[in-house]
Length: 245
Image 1: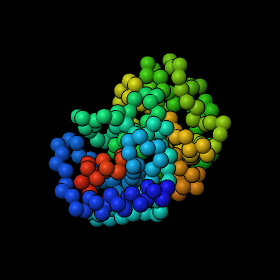
Image 2: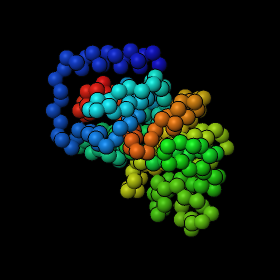
Image 3: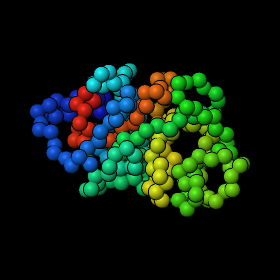
Image 4: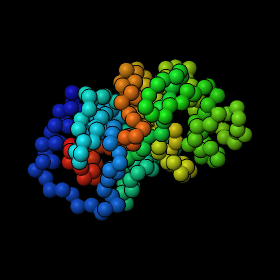
């Protein structure tokens, strides 16, 4: 990942000499003032499945870096604009769809932490069972929702177990992508533990176990943490806050 870090510095120096791009207001990404914590994931390109996550905390009007950068793995096919706290650009070339192997790009709130056992943090946290399902069937009333399959009337044919037979969901965070359940726009987006194969995820953001544990301890409900996830050139182009660069 040295290549990524070198490119980060190069882009920062390059943009210092460039004029700010003119965008329609709807295409700019504005981070709400009430949010005091930010997880910023940046990649080299839309197709890159490797990237860097940097934590930030807002101090007065500026964002201050927290901790060391975290090397993450994204969707096996990179990124596509998702549905969150931003407007998808009119000329968007890459848009997240169900089953496309892309992680959602844009600005998103976080739902809750989760895992296999109790875990005390200052953020909502759920312990999931094998019978808890995240529904990825667009025809279901429960599409893009986590449900207890033992207490609802199942109307779905496709789902994901929230307690896996491996460790990948031992710790995780739900990402509020496509909250209005737009059919085929993508579902079940999480931050979780990465596998060892580096082949990319189905659309989630993954990191090492100790790293996500640190993130879970760090996020605070009253600071309204957000996830900003984009190629680095798009962050430079669309995010007005220069203290993030």
